[in-house]
Length: 226
Image (cartoon, rainbow, N blue to C red):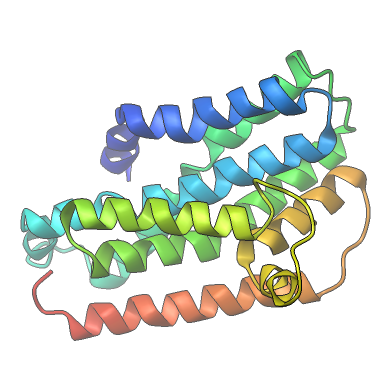
């Protein structure tokens, strides 16, 4: 875990894309808005989870590192758990950066309990994205994996209303309600406002986590080349 965290923090693309960019977006377009704070925090959380959990896996597979790990005392379950924990942990720099920008520049004045609730919601809600990123890293190869993760991230961010907010026409609005990014956005907004949310978004997040987790396990059992 220490090795993977250090490797991720040395990745300039990660720091720019998932820490500097959401902070910059907040400062340029959403300063002083709690909705923008939540949206950019969700941006950082979902992107950080996807890329940290799955971003380096494809390279490790190509270099034979995962095959090498199989002859060490580290079990497959421990490796999978470590990647998921890594994905959750690496959401923290972006979330913390956006929240600090909101406090120092945007003059956000949420009570401590709401800040804690927002952080807790984002960390827990990042799990489906960790598993989805891990599945993509185990399935795609090389630069294709990096590109695939970025495409999925932006697709979920746009469709879920994290970026480009506003109602969608017809069936697209219904599809939006089924995305994990939209559900996390709803819970983040509720945490910041101190309001309750129905259980439907939670069900969406759990469903995505279960499906992505099952896909990861199936991919690991099926593959003998990683």
